[in-house]
Image (cartoon, rainbow, N blue to C red; front, side):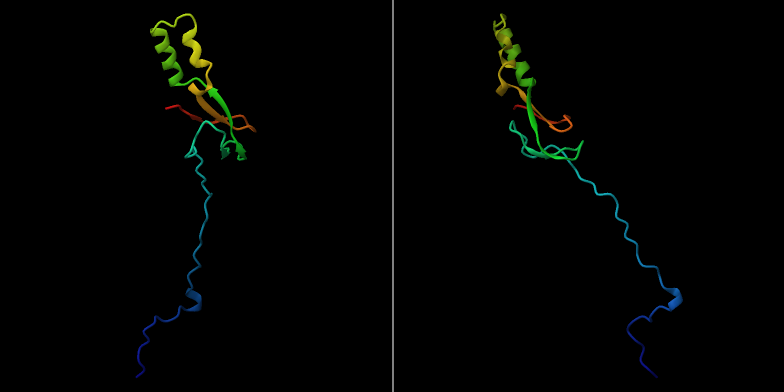
Length: 111
């Protein structure tokens, strides 16, 4: 009597299982705030228009600017000197925007 084979018998030609179908879904690209956001322009891919760009930076008043203005006002700088933080770019937050579609991408907030 022949010895049984340790392998399963081959499938019959009519009982073949269809080959597996691997469906590839859409690629998801996560675009968020760069890890090293700064006051300087950065290379970035715009999530709105998809272009690889160098951001355009614009100073905008932030919490630090308003806190300094309020502090100066409380301590007696009421003749316009309290508005000085709005004239100094290094005391303001920085808005990064796309030069192509002009959408704001993110803001760098001063610590």
